[in-house]
Image 1 (cartoon, rainbow, N blue to C red):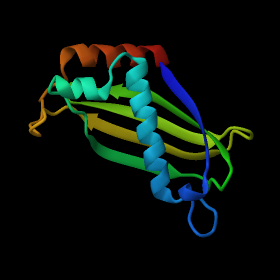
Image 2: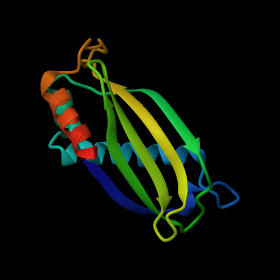
Image 3: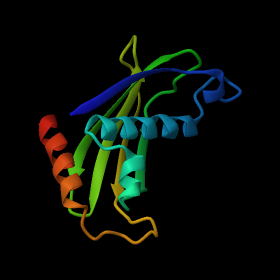
Length: 138
């Protein structure tokens, strides 16, 4: 299972040279993860009401090329790994018109309660959904 959305690079996404500021990618990547979870039927606000929060614990971004002002981007998000403790999202940002790859990212999340205590195992119902999404990628 994969979520794909488009985004145009705005001036506020860039630095003084019209190149996308590296931190802008993080916002788009978060949007992709939220959209994917919603597509699987899980709104993060509703999960929090049920005492489940999924913070990012690791981000690995490989910058391949620089996106620029007015570029039309495609952000793709899918589940690439599920362990009892964490979920790994793989995400790419590329040019809609040329397919040029700007970044590829691997982002790990865990599950904690609202007080910050780590669940040693991802809640079963969520783990099952993420494993199902992973199987759709094979």
